[in-house]
Amino acid sequence: MMGTKARRFAPLINVSLEDLVPADHFYRHLERTLDLSFVREFVQQTYAGGGRPSIDPIVFFKLQLVMFFEGIRAARQLMRHAADRLSVRWFIGYDLGEPLPDHSSLTRIRERYGVEVFRRFFEQIVEQCQHTKLVWGRELYIDGTKVQANASKDSLTPRFFVEAHLSTLFSDQAEEATGEGEQDASQDESASTEPSPQLEKSSPVALPTSLSLEQRCELSQQNEARHDWIEQLGAQDRSVKGRSYQRMADYFVSTTDPDATLMETTKGADMGYRTHYVVDGGKARIILGVLVTPSEVMDNQPMRDLIFRTCFRWKLRPRHVTGDTKYGTTDNIVALEREHIHAYVPIADLTQRTPFFRQEDFQYDAQRDVYVCPAGKELHFCQRQTTERSRRYRARAKDCNHCPLKAKCTTSTQGRSLCRSVDEQYLDRVRGYHSTEPYKKALRKRQVWVEPLFAEGKDWHGMRRFRLRRLWRVNSEALMRSAGQNLKRLLKKRGWGRRPYPTEALHAPLFGLFLLASNYFFEVLLSFLGNGSEYLMSKSECHTL
Image (cartoon, rainbow, N blue to C red; front, side):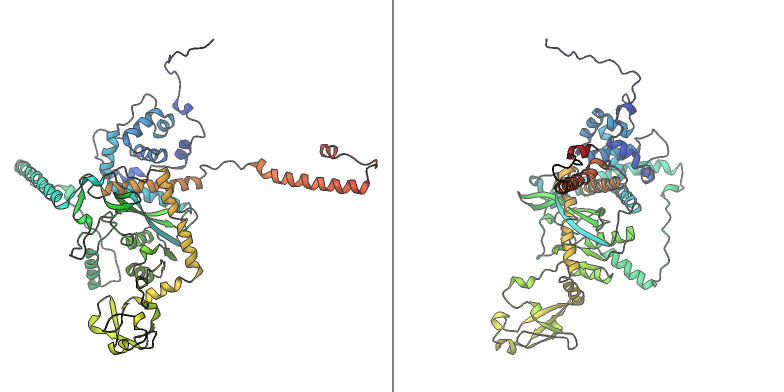
């Protein structure tokens, strides 16, 4: 007869969560091979000395790893998932009857930590990879990918309107805070006039260098004037203004996510960011540097900051840095070549857009400082058309106007002119790399070294669309995702996911070769002895023996 299952649940007696999680579960491997006690040192300054105990920082980062490995995109969904999974409860250390942290607590903790704590967590994972000899350091590969923002293009609003609204709002809040502060100050002046010891900060000690005071001052001014992409968390430098240089993001801003900007996708324009990776050239493909910028920021702009910070932070001396055509700017090439790092990047030839002779068709005579055109005429240095970054060379007008090759050279009546960069020697050196086999091998390797990491993040770990908003939050999300990708390689190196070697599979080919050899041996033996020999045995009997 058909049975019926009644839903009756008895209370658990003498049942331990330790016994309910399988011994070969993934989170047991993760707990055994990764010690997260280092996070306490990172977040020590964000907690007060007394008060109610908070959620353990190790628990917070374990939940972040669960979110990465399980493909969860929201804190609410994460805590519902943790309540249903015995393995997750065991991993974060919460018993069956113990209440789990609230999802809102995870958001407050992330806001209190800031992006710097996530960066230190990412760097600690890279440091462990370096100690495990997963970082090679002889080659670096850089690339970027587009990631959709958690915002819609329908939220775009004129920037001046948003800035005016925010300035009015902030001014009102500042006036209220000033009024309250004056009342509190008048009450505190009678109580104490001594400065608080917490506000007294010691200035950093200057390290000894071989630079003179003038050189130090000059370098300090240059560093203050330049835009530090790492320090600014990839924010766009909006100090560039002018009629000939206009950006859409300078005039429109999203009210949902003000840091996201418009980007072109296969389905049209959408709000998004751009994630940049610096990847080691070793077999493990460890991610050494991560930065998220608005989508309007070109890939070549933060390249120097990412490369040199990676080399300085991990004490690397790479032989070459490889990127695609977008990174082949003069500033990037000169910066790498001056440090004796080969810049394996293609250089875009803008002269190919015209039907006239290219600059490569002209021969440069370094001793005389002149160019020689295909017709044999000379182009001399023109002082009045020279800038700080380039030198202008121009042929005489009568030579060009009477030249039979003028139709293939220029349409100007003033003569053909060429612009030579002051750093042309570095560009010529990089052009010489293009015909070498190491350069071609590096470009082929880049396609299978960096881009699969982007595909892994988008297909398996929710990288197609950021779940958080604002630039510092998406940088924190990208750092946590990159740390998880490196952690997968680290766990593999330490033994996670390694199955016992199939001994039967190893001996199967050898056993098959033995059978073939034995069959051939018996066929030869039968032909030699004949069918009537008394010493003849069947092959089945011999196999039995």
